[in-house]
Length: 201
View 1: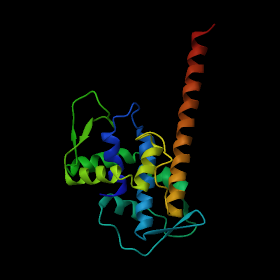
View 2: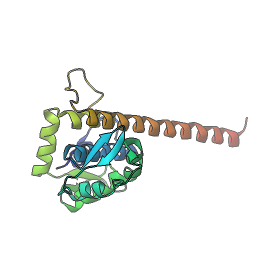
View 3: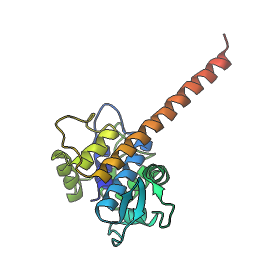
View 4: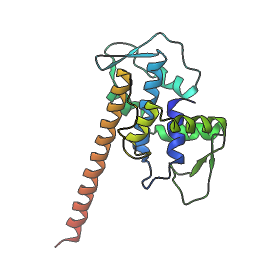
């Protein structure tokens, strides 16, 4: 599977103390798509901008959709702009696609859920591939998972990314997730202040 699909499966399987937020995961999935497109030659990162490459369209449908959305003419798009544009509701898109492919199935209430339906990963070769990639601590997957809180924070023992473009994308995902969290906190404070205003002294 693609890095994004592997990441989504890991998020579903995660049994950490904190569920992965759909917004955070959507941003990370968009970043995973970028890294796969960069690795396949479908894109290049030049001066912080995503420049189309000459590689053929990916076989994977969702990755192909991502590639088709790349801005093809100057001025090109920044990584940050791409994450926010492509990342909108992307977790729900991946959930629907993986359910349609038989990689996810409905499950009983009481565990992690994404969107309205609760799902679990089906025991398939694709699941085994994602788990194997995670267990060998593949750097890109590990870095993106860490950004959204899967497996805890980054460890000094984990291998670093050896690709500048992938490093830049992961850093942009991290910044976007932090920005999203800041927006959440601001809304929480504003809502609390509004509630106190209505309650009065």
